[in-house]
Structures are given as C-alpha cells and as structure tokens.
Image 1 (cartoon, helix red, strand yellow):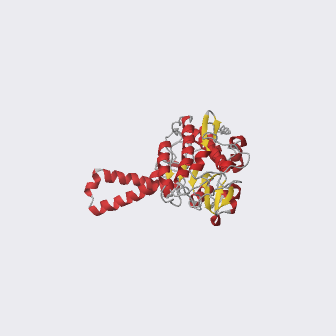
Image 2: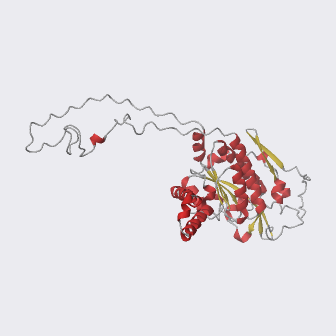
Length: 383
C-alpha cells in the first residue's frame, strides 16, 4: 500500500531512515522502514485503549490507533543503551513473554545471548519467592539423577511414570531460568497487560522493567516503555533482536567475574570470638571445678563434700578493643550494577536520554498523515 506524503516532504530512499547512535564505540542501527514493514505502528482498536497511552498515539484510522514511531525509536534507543550498560557489568536481564507469538523468538535469542527467559506460564512468586523456585530446580536435578541413572531400574512402572511427569512439569515451567542463580537487574516484558503479575513482583523488589507495550497497557508501571505492536511476530522479533544485539555487545566489554572469596573468619579454634566456647554454655559440665549451672569454676558446692570449695578464678583483664574503621565503598562492576539497579525513574531518564537529533522525523512514513489517500487495514495484519 502506497503511503501519501505531506506537502513539502521529500522522497525517502531505502536507507534514508537509518539512524546510528554510538555508545563507547558500539553502534545500534535502527531502520524505521523495517519498523513499518513489521507493522510495529499498528495498535489495538480504539475502544480498548488506555487513555494513559495518549502521548504515544499518533492518530486513529478506521477505529485503529496508530502508534507514533518517534516514540518507538526513542524508547528502543534508550532500552538498548540501558541493556548494554547492564550487560557490560555482568548483570542479568530476564525476558518474559508467554504469548505464542513471542515464545519461539525469545527462546532462540536468549539462548544466543545467554540470558534467562520465561515463555510458559509465569509462576506467582518467581521473583518474590525465589528461594522456593530454586528448591524446585534442585528437585529437577535430583529427578534427572534418578531417572537417568541406575536407580530407576529398581522402581516400578507407576513410580517411573510419576517421576517422569513431575520432571516434565518442572522443565516446562522453569527450564528458562535454570541458570539464574540470583535475581535479575532488569526485566524485558512483552505485553505487560498480560504479564501484570511479573510487573508487580518486579516493582515490589525494585527491579527495572522494560516493556513492549501496546495501546491497551499502562505506561506508568514501566520504567522504560517501548510503544509498539505486541501481537505481531515480526514486530516482537525485530524489537527483541535489537535488544539482544546490544546485550551481546555489552557482554563483550564486561570484565571477568571475580572468583568467590573464601571466608576465613568462620570456624576454627583461633577465630576472633575466642576459640572454643563450649565451656561457656549454661549448664556445661566437664573441666576442673566447672560442673553445675554456674559455668566454669562457679559450680555449686554439694553437701557432704570433702574439703573447701576452690576459690573463684579471677577475671583476666582484656585489652581495649580498637574502634572499627568503616570499610571503603565497594568499587568495581558489582557496585555499578547495584547503583544501576537502585536508580530512580528520573535518574534513569537522564542516564538513558537520547538526543532529539537521533530520532528521525517519521511523520511521512506513519499512516494517517495529512494528505493521505489510502487507509490502513481495519485490523492488524495476520501473521
């Protein structure tokens, strides 16, 4: 379908819409023509809209809202810049998309970038009750050891069937976050209106949320909104691939993870707590003159005992404890990641701000422009 141009607009070539934004030598190329071809600008029917999405809507044609691609490009640039920074600090980004249109793309791209994902039903408490989720993953490893080993030969058919069914259920729901040993620093959500539980859990824990949201969503719940069509496979694939590329570029510049620190302050008779403290327990028996409730050398004199009770031992004076000097602030990737995760929405806007010159004037390419002769279809293009 040919799109009419407003008066005074020049003809745009195939590469006229390409925008390049540099960040530490890494360039993110955004082709607005690709956004239009993928149908990113199509919204929901006007009767299903959320009034809070009005700043992201360009016009309405045939009862269909048309999304402003200026805001889409701006949101995609900011999200790419933020994901690049998180990945460069060895941060985790959880991708959430339980729609059938998004499941296959998310699995493929997250596997390529090494990021966790959720493409089946979002289990309530995946973030807020993460300890229980990890226990179920440990149960999955136990089931794999039983069913893949020789121990399964001693079980009956009914027990094998029960264990296999439990294993498949855990794999279906939690296979994407099997390698996620800690809470993520950010979430990418496809259609936050559908994944409202994941949005609530992330906001409760202070995890930043980036979302591809349509005209029926609430942008106030999202830290970095990317307005666009969340029902089209091509639209979702285009946005996810752009973000995954920025994550891969960020991971290429990430420092090596430091080895786990050994804790030498625990255990051993020579620790700072005074070594073995078993003799100081209430009611501890044992040593010379130490029986009874009074602790060592404070035993109760029994009637009829021979000889006088031993004199109580004098307390040994202890050296004054020097004042503790506060440890210096943590530096390095861990501190930067925590600082990024605790940024307010205003600080995030300032950190991920994109200059207006980086966003092209896309009025001529958006359906519904002045002087348009053709109209878009009355419904979203079928996939």
